[in-house]
Image (cartoon, rainbow, N blue to C red; front, side, top):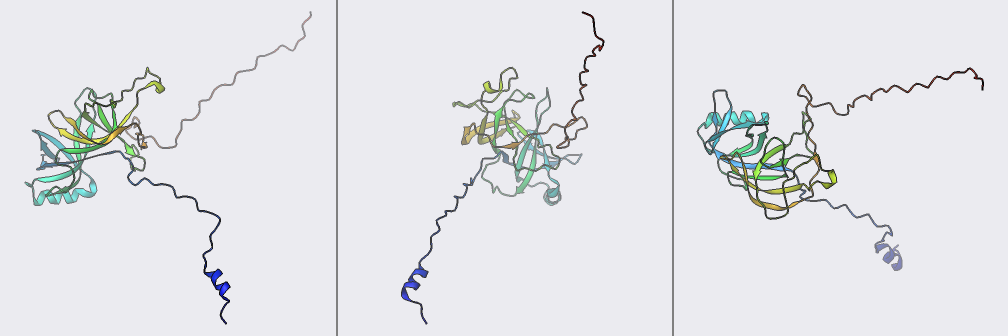
Length: 258
């Protein structure tokens, strides 16, 4: 037996709920992150100690290859020792007081032709433009992003010396301990292309990828090593200092004659 027409009509109509679902949170598709990466071109060499080097502008710079890529790199060098390669690298800089910065490169990938956006010698930097005590030249400080992992737990930052003269309000930050924190100048987050200059042992500003901003992405703060060179264990706090409680003054219980 078929249902009455009026019942069929009521059932077929969608029922709207009075409750509305909460709006989904907006997710930033391309969040701003710290970054330092670039492209180099050259013929890698190997010295007597087994270190790999790359000649740039008449100088030789050390190449560091991560463990999981090292065997593939050795096979590449053994099969084609005189081949010119395009290298995708992370720039590193060792700061030594009263000495020139020691720049070297960590090799992330290599190809016979250049498949990357940047031309050889061009690097993409995203970091804080500031002065650090070790060098006179301002640097782009590339900190470890908030979601970064570090097996050693140190979260070291890369401070890369740069030459940059701008016409806008952005200036390299310089810390002054004599100035109150709220009165210090702002720190600027710079995103741009920088060209490596071997003769100056630094990078020169080429162009902005985004305008400078005072909004700095969250990052992992570097952890200073202890005297033995190891990072201090997390969560360990110094025990509170024991303080002697003040002794109560002694009173004479004997009554005194007035």
